[in-house]
Every structure is written in C-alpha cells, then in structure tokens.
Length: 273
Image 1 (cartoon, rainbow, N blue to C red):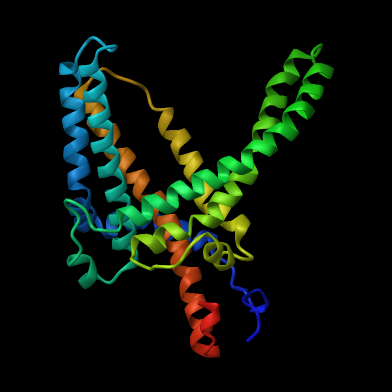
Image 2: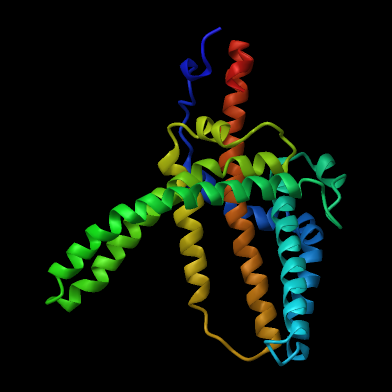
C-alpha cells in the first residue's frame, strides 16, 4: 500500500463568504438549544458577577487564593463545556443533540482539553526559536530608527505580525482537531487536522484566526459602566459573538470533513480518512 503522504489531499476550497454568513445565523437558528446548553455557564457567570462584592477583600490571604482558584476552575469548566455543546449543536443531528448531556458534563471535555493544551504547547515551542531569531533583527531596526520616534509603533506592529502570524496559521490548521473531539471522533489528532486542512491554511487563518481576533477587539471597545445590568448585557453579547466564532470553526471543519468522507466513499480508500 502507498504511504499516506502520497495520497491525494483536499482540493476543495473553503467558501469563506458563505461560511461567514452561515455562522452569523447559527446563534439565532439554534437559539433554544444554545440556551439549554449555555444555561450552566450563564448561571455560573451570573453568580460570579453578583457575588463579586462579597469576595474576600484581603488578596494575599489563603482564603482569597482558594476562593479565586475555585471560581476560576468552575468558570473554565463551564466555558469549555459550553464550547463543546456549541460544536455538537452545530455539527450533529437534532436527535443526537437532544440526547447529549450538557450538565454536568458531556464526556468529551478531557479529549477537547487535551488537544487544546497540545496545540498551545506546540505553538509555544514554535514561538521560542521564532522570537530568538526575530528579536535581534527587530532590535537592529529599532536602533536604526531611534531618531524617528514616529516609526516605533510601526516597528512594533511589524514585529507582532511577524511573530504571531505563523502561530495563528499553525493554530488555525491544528484547531480542526477540536470540533472532531467535541463530536466524539477519536484518533483525529494534529497530523490528521493538518492533512484535512491542506490547501486551506490561509482561509482557515482568516475564518478562525483574524475574524475572531477582530470580533474580540471590537468587543473591548465597548464603554465601561459600574452596573450589574450592563455587565450581564455585555456578557450576553460576548456569548453571542462567541457562538459565532465557534460556528466559524464548526462550519469549516464540517465542510472539509464531509469532502474527505466523500473522497473515501468514491475511492474506497480508508487511508484518506
């Protein structure tokens, strides 16, 4: 049998505009199921907001550290469970979704967290030599431009792009392993995600990297008010934007995975799967 590297990869191209339009409609199309899946997160975050004034005032005490750690752990678990629920709602049939246990946990969390941690570690390993190479280069440019202070912001922007762009690119392609884990596909790791995303790296970077980054940046531009009602409203908007971001990844994964499955069905070659 030929080596899997010799097998034809995806030639289909992600329909970027169609995916963006579809993802923007997903929260409204699946609102009842998303509300059910996100209810634990809503309860947890609302409780955190309402109980914030009653947190221990002394931040250097053991009580404060234990309380803060417990709250962070509960919030993070609820957040990951909500993301997995979104993937399942967007990708699975309604019958399977209805049978999914969203609380306390669906059972997919360890796999999802494991791949997410591995992606983060791989990106961190890549960033180390990248920073070692680029930092001296940018230092030379900064020294040369020290007499032109108006050029410094541009130099830092260029440095940030040069260091972060490769990481965003890698993470975007590897991130296809996350929805696969969320819907219960096993044995679909980073190499499989890399192969599945072949020919669509820059499209995935746009859909799952740049667009979510712009969404998050736009959310930070909202004014701040000392109001519980406003904080809850901001949180609701954050949930809506978050569901759209998860939808972009889910739809990208679904499009490429279905195409790969069609390749397997037409050729009968399971090495492609």
